[in-house]
Image 1 (spheres, rainbow over the protein chains, first blue to last red):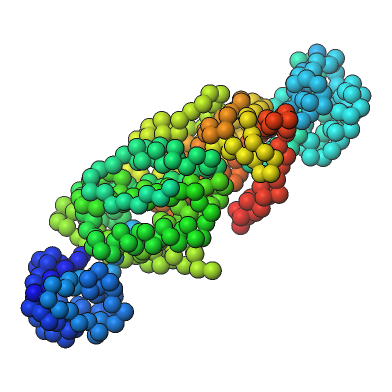
Image 2: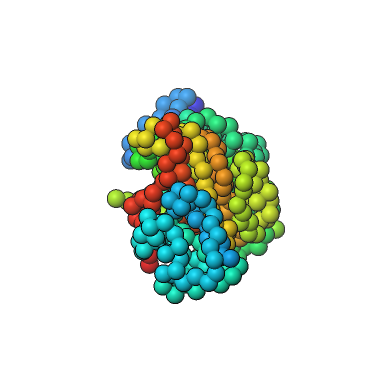
Amino acid sequence: MITIVLLGKLADLGGASTLTLAAPLDWEGLKAALPPAMAEALDDPRNRVALNGALLADKAELRANASDEIALLPPVSGG
Amino acid sequence: MITIVLLGKLADLGGASTLTLAAPLDWEGLKAALPPAMAEALDDPRNRVALNGALLADKAELRANASDEIALLPPVSGG
Amino acid sequence: MRDIRLLTQMFIPGTLIGPFTQANPGLGGVCTFVGEVRHDAKEHGGVEALELSHYEPLTLPGMHELADRAFDRFTLMGLLMVHRIGVLRPGEPIVCVSAAALHRRDAIDAVDFCMDHLKSAAWFWKREKRADGWHWIEPRADDTRDLARWQS
Amino acid sequence: MRDIRLLTQMFIPGTLIGPFTQANPGLGGVCTFVGEVRHDAKEHGGVEALELSHYEPLTLPGMHELADRAFDRFTLMGLLMVHRIGVLRPGEPIVCVSAAALHRRDAIDAVDFCMDHLKSAAWFWKREKRADGWHWIEPRADDTRDLARWQS
């Protein structure tokens, strides 16, 4: 299984702060497994993705396997 | 009598931090009453003069009477 | 002396700054900035609480990288950077950055630099509780302007 | 809240900053700079003591005028400006400036502004005691450069 960590507003959109999805997952597979509103938000370039704590420069390169952690990160808040 | 307050290096030059001189005093009178090295230092434009706590824009305009206080102020120290 | 921390509980800045100052003997100056949760956020009415969430694998490393950049850029003896997470009430301190240096310009500029970069370098998401519920805080245009000050 | 003082005795900055912060409820941030007497002044060998003399009728009014200018220039809730006079030992705090504001930029800039202007606005004469006796400290070119930052 793969743990999906949802931060900030994306947790509201996903209805939870963590989800669990079946491995393996690539970027299109991840979006297909999420609610459509969530998948759409993820394509927004301001929303970033981290795999096991490392930011991905290109989301399309996501390749997650069993016991990996994917974090979905909206822009950080202003001060 | 007129009190002369000497600040910073000028106190070293005058040998004391306060002096008392006979009233009245103008700028030339003040310089004549002080040791020559001191009088010379006072002409340096970086050294300022205050009469009763108010800085003089032009030292030559000094007019001090009995119970006045003249302060002789070298440049303040750097940080 | 370098002290970078995320705190889950209310803290009193003075209890951090005193020991931090003592830990940098021979310093010329210490500059400290403490940010507190404001009661009133702009035009939105009273704030009852502020919640900060973070993503552990990114947030603390982000603060350490920012500290590295501050040490590279300024001549510092010490740097303290402490940020609250969790639920905060108005009036509680949320961030404390303190820099110790031989010269005041380095200490003041390092604090200014860290504060301008903390929000972009560190991953925090904030939401405010007002009378009508919780509201996420969006990024601000000011933040980009603040960062532009340090491009050179 | 405005607190401008000359102190003849050793002080602990935290004992001033805590009450100052409390006295400005609703603030967004507090910036504080504390300067300490350095052990080693440049190339001159160890400093054993520093003596600050002042001229009462000019020094305190000069600090108040500087505070007026800071309140005019920045949006501040409070300003604390405390300076030691008399004989100080290395490691003792010599100056503490703290500014409270709704926004951090005002708080940080006000402290920076006051520190740059304090030496020219306030009348202090300093001498250092080193192994070979007392030495007056002269004005520095840096001080003029610091002031030029604020011309606009």
